[in-house]
Image (cartoon, rainbow, N blue to C red; front, side, top):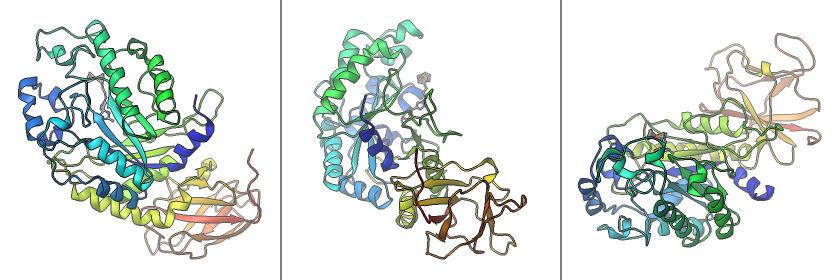
Length: 428
Ligand code: H79
């Protein structure tokens, strides 16, 4: 197991960029195109000859993530189509055999290390190119005989398992420090891939690397997909586990020209705050184009998220969840949540649905809060002082505190109030 210190370091980073990028970006039908469209290998090989992302600039990508307030990046080294975005010596089906010819993973790893950005690698176990790994395209009869479906057909063979272990070794030993390893889809149980042995080897190659839970054997990080869980993810003792929600920024992971359902910065900021106030991390995805650009809708989103983070980052990075009483989701302020900083002297109340201007009762009631005396509070956006009274709104008790907010929100995405106490919170 990893030390709490290493786990905490990753948890403190909070916000990352997921990148789904590969030859499928040319088809523009999502990363599952080869499977969904049932494309035989011979036809699909064309995309290796076509892949030439002349606009790719690793430093620019890292800067875009950094300016958005992200502390880590995680890129697809290989998705289900088996195409390697790095120079694997175990296959010819890879980036260095395209007209582009450069090792994209290497360039991105270097740019991350240079910028102090944590570096993460996504790796799909399910591989449609390798028939000894979960059936490959044989499962559909697209590369040789149809081998059927179901547990037997999907059981990985020795050469498939070796292929995967070898590639994970390349990824964990050839790209400098790797902070995060994101396994994805597999068709058989984790033991069928000698998962425990693989994790053990990975700990040797990268002793400080966080490994997600999708290899099907115990690892470090839970990985809810496209959802922020209702509650913090905890173990049997109720202790907070390391978890990260990964999420699309439109309806697809890889670039789809026709998919214009992009999330706005307001939505992304709210998802981030939701995750962090439940003790989780948030990994928002970007699907770069075949040329190596980010979709313009993503660029706008990232820029605006960065503007929010510039003023609200202190309520995010390194903060912990701060549970509010059940009555805190007072009628207009649904989604109210809170975080607390490490020293415990500041609690941050996050208000995602700030009432529109002109409303008569810009109040937020926090029941049962707090035991200690508040010194003062203010909006993180501009330092405006927020008045308060030690009483509830409906229940006129003195165990609640009511924030008397200004009419206009601090920020339309999430308004955050910093509450300073006369003494810091005693943490158990
Ligand atoms: O990379 C992105 C997606 O392509 C991938 N994970 C994110 C991060 C993903 N999308 N959906 N899923 C994974 C769900 C997986 C469903 C599966 Fe299956 C069930 C895979 C194997 C069994 C469907 C049924 C596809 C193959 C059989």
